[in-house]
Amino acid sequence: MSIDNLRALGLPSGRDEAWKYAARTLSRRDWWSAPSDALSLPDKAAIDAAVLPVEAPVLVFAGGHAVPRALGGFGALPAGVSLRPLSEDAVKAPTGDSGEQRIAAIAAATTPGAWELAVAANVDAGSLQLLHLPAPGTGALVLRIRLARGARLQLLESLADGESALAGATSAAGSATGSAANSPAPTLTRWLQVQLADGASLTHAIVQQLPLDAALLEQLDVSVGRDATYLGLPVSLGAQAAHTAAHLSLEGPGAFGHWQQFLRVDGNQHTDVQLTVTHAAANTTSTQAVRALAGGRSRGAFSGKVVMPPSAHGADSAQSIRNLLLSATAELDTRPQLEIHVDDVKASHGSTTGSLDEQALFYLRSRGIGEQEARRLLMQAFAADVIARLPWPSLREWLATRVLP
Image 1 (cartoon, rainbow, N blue to C red):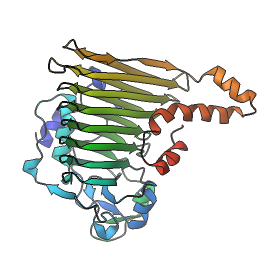
Image 2: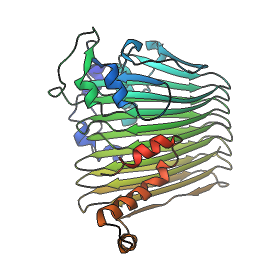
Image 3: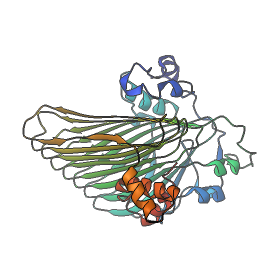
Image 4: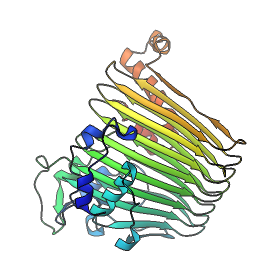
């Protein structure tokens, strides 16, 4: 679909159930302008300042552009891991005009270059970090992540604040730029396609800490083969408005799909997450554990839908969604959903919303802990259910001081 057609369609309105919370804010942004070829790229010092504290090779993108090795963007990859550009013919956005399909179409039409990250068969690639820095104006990225049979990877994606990176940017031609203080607020469109062959295993952490004036649209399509495992660990902290559409399809018998998310909104932030898990084969397993925290006048939404078609014999699914409201003006809207078309399955779901436990707060204060410290400890315990699943202790420690408003 052409950019002109996409611009004419715009984004879905608030009448669309999946878009009703952040649609008004997102529709005010320009998602249809292709990123400039003269985009300013961050220098090595700025990149080093934005990298998360995990010992791993780092690949860097700025506004969807790959940052070259000369600027510190691409180091040596582990053996058996490759990164290559994809041709336009290899990037085929889904047809149709649904909201989720539109995200992929916008990303495919506006990206400055699509990429494939691949791990060869039976290779344990260890850890790898992908750093995404915002750029003034519009940015877009299409990324395919492909693990061959028996491959393993721990992938950490960081959507960074990047204010220092923009302030110290270098143009693609090599000349220095001025401060980005007067630049337009960044928008980023992402379309990720994850393909796990039989027996592959991917731990996929996404730490979203974009600037508080940024906006994000992202679509994540995950296909999990026989006896393969996908563990999604998104941590949503930044952006003024964000919408995520995730589709997790368990395609082979014995496939495992897990989604463990921490979502925090504060001030006037709006964040929507729409997740659909499809048990497309027999004897598949999925879990969803979501912890959402909201303060100020913010609004967060999570919709988790599990679909079990007639082919899903022996499937097992469990959902657990817990919301914590820190102010009377914040909102958290969560919708656990089950769509079951077969009998011999297990499925459970639950959602709770509340405020800080006053009895627990009283207990901590009675032990000599100040009120602010007691509140901080309770909120950290609330987030720990998800943060503890991250496989990097240094990142868990780093996040412990940043997940709270």
